[in-house]
Amino acid sequence: MKIFQDRNDAGRQLAAALRQYRGGKDQIVLALPRGGVPVAFEVAADLGAPLGLLIVRKIGAPAQPELAIGAVASGGVVVRNDEVIRLLGITDAALSRATESAQSELAAKERLYGVATAATEVEGRTVILVDDGAATGATMRAAVAAAKARSAGRVVVALPTASAEAAATLSREADELVCIETPEPYLAVGYWYADFDQVADDEVRRLLEQARPGPVIRPPLSP
Image (cartoon, rainbow, N blue to C red; front, side, top):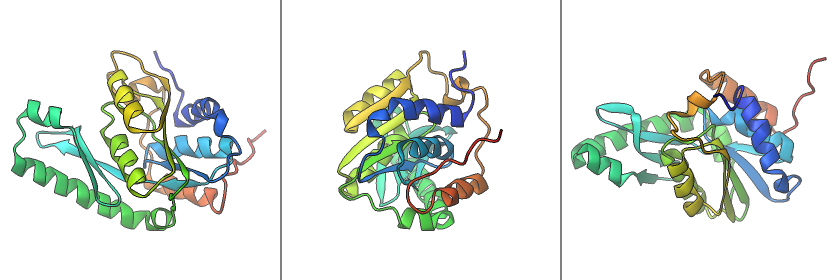
């Protein structure tokens, strides 16, 4: 069963679940690129909030790079899933190499999106962190840690879908979790979308450009 048509649909549904933040002062929506950007764009447009980025890269398991064993985020934040690392028998040396690889990817993305990340000020603000979903929660945990490290006033995690385990973890680490669905068995984030095509860097830049300056204003729909 598909829950969302695409990321834009997910963003609109998520925005409805965040209606208490509409028109709020001193809040900002931060997307986790790339998949979180179209979702966050819809959320920011509905709430009348500015849109920015918080770059996070997962630390992939050495033999299974798609499996997250942790994540790194802007500002030197590193979050590791010690239970998974232990179960997989990953050595300290292998973990260090995987972490360094993720940090290199992070640095490259920061250079690519440098203007958006450098201009994002979160101190004392309500920060709404948005992604297209969370299977393990590792990347969003890193994002929460990064927002807190930058003295965010309140950290809200907003997700269209997440595994029950990830949702439970994130609800403890953030000030608030807003998640539409936590289906089980979870399988993967993309399983719950009819259209889950990859989001291109050009699309990320286009949406960010459309969002500047100030609050996001969604363009009118074509007749």
